[in-house]
Image (cartoon, rainbow, N blue to C red; front, side, top):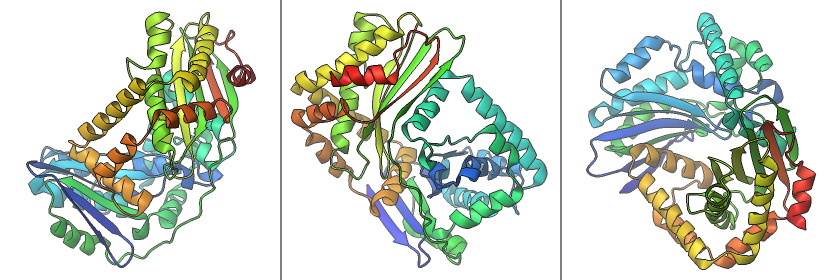
Length: 419
């Protein structure tokens, strides 16, 4: 597979990866403008803007946007994260120029029709309501807010209802003007792609745009805290997070292996102890997430109100034990799981396009897959035990939702970890 990168004079980057044998391609634009780039009064606007991109341009109605892609059997979608907003499509090889034309149109030429703004406002408010009614969804927003209180990085991507209700056409246009410049965009494509043809088309579309410059963002600092929401639900939902390495830190791979050992599959410690041995839950997992300047190790489970204290206690005890008796066999299995997940995922052109866009945004280059494999293989038992030991005194956050009267508070959990 061949990765090629071209940067236009105005900073617009085009990165492609040809995957021989494929008949389809994934192509999209990744904009370095996500939730953390919003000011407090803008919270939720990056996501609102993502919705509005599909509501009509100067050349296409919302129906035409959908029809042009679906008429050739493709699909088109978008998402907003804390660090980026992405607009992408999957099409057959012959339709890559069409996909690029449609995607660039929705990114560069949205009309922000007032009637469509009101329609989509209603859609987003329903999305917020749906999230609140989904305990194992909303609890992660609350956990994130508790981890990074009073910070742009900690605010919800959807935004609060009051903000969503107040956004105007001018607010949307202002955010575009501030962040949607060519120097903040990456055009990424993978699969059956022709790099030179994509560069030629992209140069015509983006080449004359003026850079907007990099806007400073508030640094993220894991502080920690607690949020408890009592509600009549069938379960008590329990989520715990800890300060962890950013993706620029040398320990990031050790943290990811630790998360896999603790709760990354059916053989993991938490799954075996809490679900298989004790039967306290249906779902339990741990994971490590990394961002530009921070990271989190997160544990989640749902159980009955009567058993949530036992579940919390067992979770803490397993975390403490991991610092003492982590085995080579566990670490080797976690490394194998990570590598397999990484390599299997890369069989998809959509995953490939996202990977190369994200790595280019992080490093300014696209490291070879083998480089990541070597880093994973280099993680030792001592590295993972060290990660486990640091977590015992690391800043932490707790979110609880549902029947939580018996749940311990964060201070109790912290004392038990440190004992």
